[in-house]
Image (tube, helix red, strand yellow):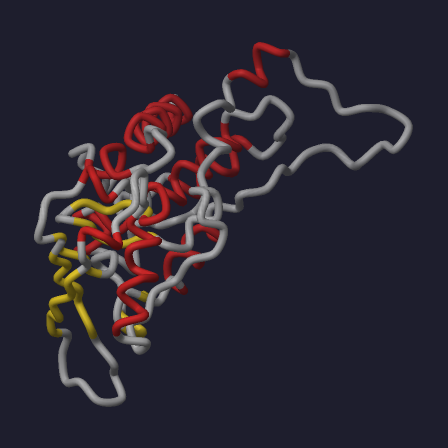
Length: 233
């Protein structure tokens, strides 16, 4: 099976280039995931560089562009891929080396969304209750693993990376806006009421299509926009 992988070492290369690897059929086991294949290819060339950790689709560290679609190598079956397999770093971010990108801006936007509960002072003598119905509203928002697959698939982020928060950060913002325990809802909506931060989203659904956890950032962003507009009334 043929793999064409983007390579780039800023210490020696002026720009990224493609390198072709071959993995023999005898080295491909039933149920093999792409991450395992990459580890085998790294035995051929130990300089091949990529991130990975949990290997279970939980940590989100091994996001990459696989045959034109962002995803996690650890949960992408090799059998699902057509040869040659084109592997590139997630787009729209500076490349540190090979398939590793600089995520600093991504985390900066996530921090800007204030992804933490802001509520009444903690009372150690009493639980902070939430109804099952209100808790259920959070499903589909808290499961994000911050892999960056959605944000780096978004043209609005590619065009305005310094101003548009991106799908992952806005999904996190939405999760706390709708949390019944949070007391900063109005403040959050005022902060998000910006033509670039939030309304730059054009809902082309790239983010939802790219999410390896099956979440729907586009829908969350649309709900945020609706909340912001209603807050004007």
